[in-house]
Length: 319
Image (cartoon, rainbow, N blue to C red; front, side, top):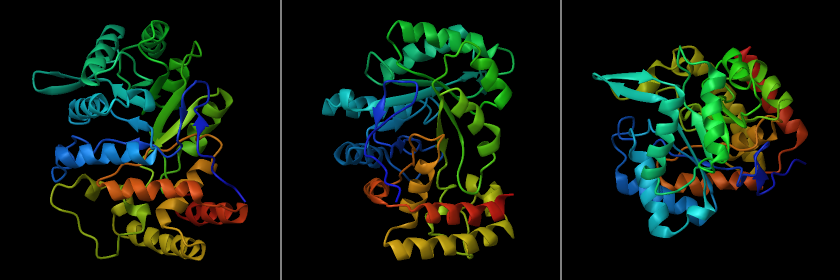
């Protein structure tokens, strides 16, 4: 049997976390989730604290700024800053009504300073370059973060949404600790594109969209429709033909989950944490009950044959 331990060290760092973390783009994220109010976001954070979910992932772009602000307020109110491993990101700046991507050393240093203020803290545990820009040499951008790490303002360095070539350039001096990228059972390209490099270079891979925007949670039916303007409507996995095939596969995953008397989401998270490249996952939550449910993945005894069965089921749909 494969059991998930309750605390892990993110490789290449001294960050010790619950491997079931929390993505916070719903906290203050009314731009994407207009129905989620700030009070709900605060409740989500309080529940995470109560459940021992101590690895929180936020970003300047969530809100923008508002997710960081609410997190900072909650941590200050509760006095729990030392109990939370806090990750945030930056790369976007606004100019003449446009959103630009900027990795220049001066911009990243200022972004860290601004994030520290919003988060009501004097250090950030993990700081990512959220998106790569076109012009900045990536090793120079990371070098700026290394200076901040040496100053104690950040504890670990990450990049997100970089191509393999950009990641290699960024890691020229070996400073990168964490890579965050798209990965789930229906979007597995990074297994061959990024995993080998991160494993070889002792870089932890943190996947986003672990439930494929809800598809892998096992709650959708073939009659699914999205509200007008919902970003999910344009995603590949929800297109006619592809969506129905994924539902057929998920039905088989539901059978495995039922035999084990666990939720599909528990099984999916446990499967990710079996991957050599992955130390922790950061599923989002729109309500507190989802956090309470997600931590149950720590109790899943995932057998080797079950891991392989899930792997093969989704390989048939993604290759």
